[in-house]
Image 1: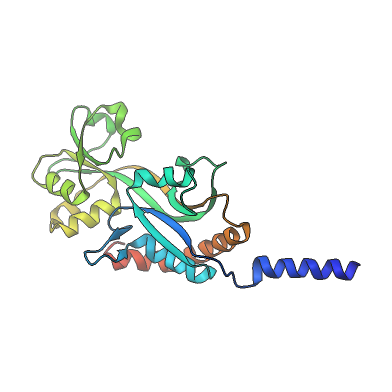
Image 2: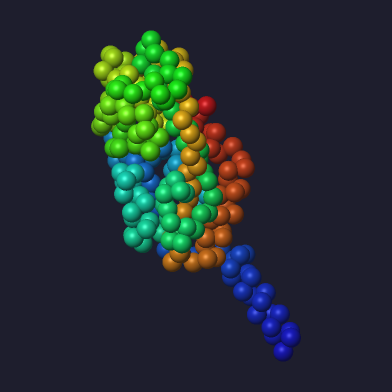
Amino acid sequence: MKRFALLCAMLWFYVAFAAPVRAAPLTVVLPEVIPHAFLAPDGRQMGIYLDVLNAVAKESGIALRYQIVPFARVVRMLNDGETDLALVNRDAVNPAQASALGAIYQLDLVLWPARGARWQSLSELAGKDVGRLRGGCQPLLQKTQPKFNEVNNFDQGVRMLDVGRLDALCGSRDVILYAIWRSGLPGLATLTPLPLTTTPVVLMANPKVNSALQQRLATAVAKVMAGPTLLQAKARFGLH
């Protein structure tokens, strides 16, 4: 009997942790922001997040398929059980509704100045024109009462910044910097942004995803993030 129990335990361990996982691809929803996750003109899915997650899929042996959506929908889809996995700010998700499998990115949120400006504190923003994308930066800046200007994308935002239609642009440092290079405005890249906060972007799993698959993914995330994949992905888009 003891030998039988031992064999059963060994078989369970092999199935859960050692045997290759054969399962239908898991769906991951990603927030649509260039260069993190976006559709190229030819329809291909591209971005830093996808480069990292492709490495995670290869390391874990679990197939992943991606759905790129406006970032306001990502948390809702995860909370409503419409996806297996999602890349989100961990604080935006109810811990009882999802499991964190590991951070794959750090979003450095900044306030990028217009030419001739240098913001030293948030108190200076009262009444100033601050660009943002789809309601972003609201919790960080609402107490200072700037005049928020919604932009369709960060390419538009940096062009407005360049011609003085905005006093500042709020968003991720890497996203804004990439938009500056895309828009051919290298002079804006030499300006000094005001750091606001750093937010980890975490791979979260729906509780319905098999626990063995979650463990494999978490292990793969840790291994990939310990290597050069993220730096290589950022370098591919001219970011360091």
